[in-house]
Amino acid sequence: MEDKMEDSKLKEFILPYELQFSMRKAELEAQEMTWEQLYSSLMNLYYQRLMEWHALKSLIAEENIKIDFEIPTDIELQKLAHDCMKEEELEYEDEYEDDDENPFLTA
Image (cartoon, rainbow, N blue to C red; front, side, top):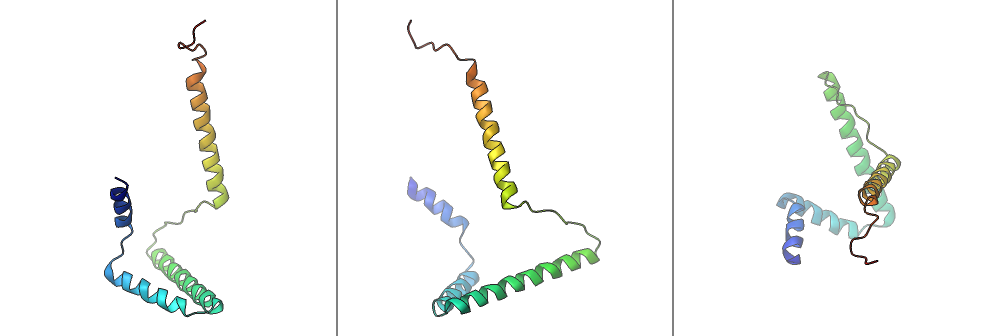
């Protein structure tokens, strides 16, 4: 049973063959790099993705399409999760608050 669940989870993350090849190639190259080289290549990749995002936003702005939205910060997400947990606890307590009398206890 667990094997089937693990297989289904793995299938979600299977990359196309051309991306698998690129990932394996990057893994082999990363093994030969020093920490400084690895850090530098990661920063270059981050810069490249940032420039791609900027170019994409510029193209969209030229077409007068507004998709600007705020991404919640980690702190906001933690606060939201904490608030949701509190609400669930309150709902659970309210649900069982009326059951003060335990029908299974004999007096």
